[in-house]
Image (tube, rainbow, N blue to C red):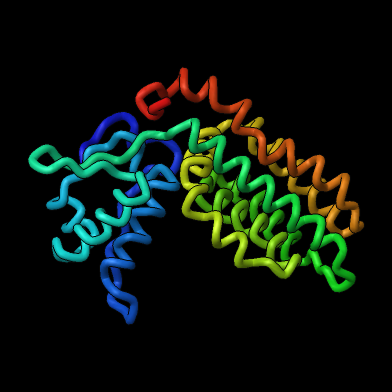
Length: 238
């Protein structure tokens, strides 16, 4: 993987060796590379070397190539014979499509969750506290993971956890944009405030109020995108 100043962007860090287990090696390699792309440990536009990846992940070329082929099918990497493999850049068109799908599903799940008499927001409160701790400790990855888990809890409470899983593949572009914007302290504070308001509304069963906050929260990409594209022009494709 080529090195550049982009490697110091949010989330930059080494790939983790693939542990042995019951799951196929190619599946484990795919999940690790997908996570690294989603979290910007591998930045948009980066050149990937099979030799370097194989050494970092401690796997042979066969499962690595199978994983790269899956990533290519999802538009996350580009494999050009005799030229090389590069990580796809962020597509703002795909970011907007992902925002539309996420907003539609999450607002619906939130309304259902608010209507459940047995709803329990304790797990949401714990995840919010984890976000506050991660922010105080400068742990951006931990903050992002807790953010994802908190939103997943809305689907869990609604009884439609599978809907959260279904939208993950197309949400990668949106997640990369969110991750790129995350280091700004003002953004993080706003996120924590919005999460607090969403949880309060869920606990109170206020579907309309919570949906209003969620809609603005999920639509943050509209505000982030222009400045981020200007700041990191090499990260974007449209």
